[in-house]
Image (cartoon, rainbow, N blue to C red; front, side):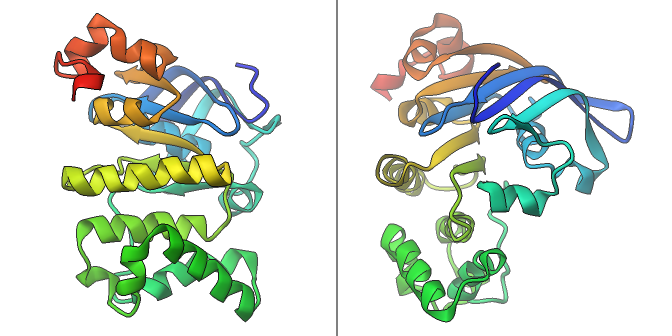
Length: 252
């Protein structure tokens, strides 16, 4: 992989010095693209995202072989917070919010790293509300009392407060109604189109993810099993059978 934006080249990742979670995984994200990282639960999607954002160490994991480069520079010695400042931010699986804080207070935590003035913070908050008008209506509500879809929007909005150029999004559809998931993916498409934000989206819902993506990588048992454009993957018979339920993506 030679992408100057994000390149993952043949990595292996282990937990507790013994459990091999991913092996020989290579992928690339081009600037300005949306890339789907697909696979069943346990295929290695979350591990791959955490390897990119240098968060494996929080779970006694590490990349044990080969390299990840971000804009041409290896990331193995870069602190996770420094990666965020450089433009990569991860939205973790499970809609992580501070439940006792209001929606707006949650969003504010995403801006702390940038040390913005009060005026700039207010402008950034309004920018997020422009993308997620639901959140503006709930701005004073405790995040823990909002719906699952609203919590996912809070998590994405908080990440966007860092002004990322690449968002690593882990299982955004998990546990949400399809209409809410489609709303979130439409916002992702608009962010990509209008602000140039790139996305690497780990997702089990292959049909939906490929509909909104430019390229896709499919993981099986910690390895890359298939790669191609979203259209090409959607048209493949084996992908149709194992990941799209045997129904063409454009018919879903």
